[in-house]
Image (cartoon, rainbow, N blue to C red; front, side, top):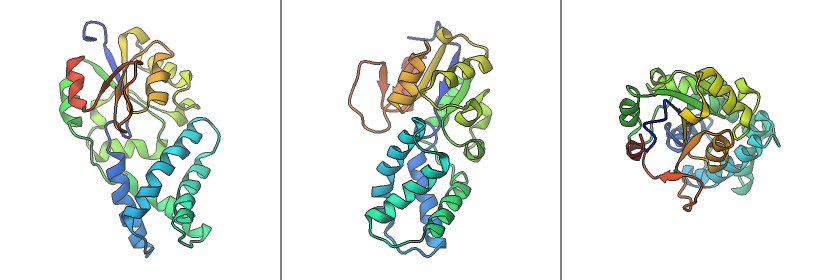
Length: 229
């Protein structure tokens, strides 16, 4: 559908290619054990996953800082589970979580397959709201860094998706016009509507079992990208 016009494909990283939930769970299993915090991992993640998404939304909207995001998403979990914990230990867990997260390299199904399929035909790039210090490590440790030309992150851009400035920076870095570009990501707000606001086509990777919509094509598996490119 797009193969006659698109030359450059931009991907989100977390929840789109890099299996954030699986890698995050393994990281928490490690840091909670190392710090002898006796709490059921399933119960912890059941609260953490939606809390993390909610705090990331606030972070995207510039309503909280990076340090507040890292602290509050953990504080919320321990409060809701009524597990007493000191602020010092929460801050230590936040640091250790970031330190170990990128060491796990699980990818979502068919990530390598689709990157191998696309790389000979298109230039591939990343646009991520993730923290600069770990996104590069995530890609290297999961062996996908070499597939991508430009890696644009929100700290580099000074704004976060869906702000148009991060997409404009990505287009400028890639030296490509929006009409020749395609964005693929899991967030309707950040990836899809953000890209479309600057004239970039988009495909919504439905990583969170969201309801169908009319904003763009929606896929359930990365292999479905072959139907469009």
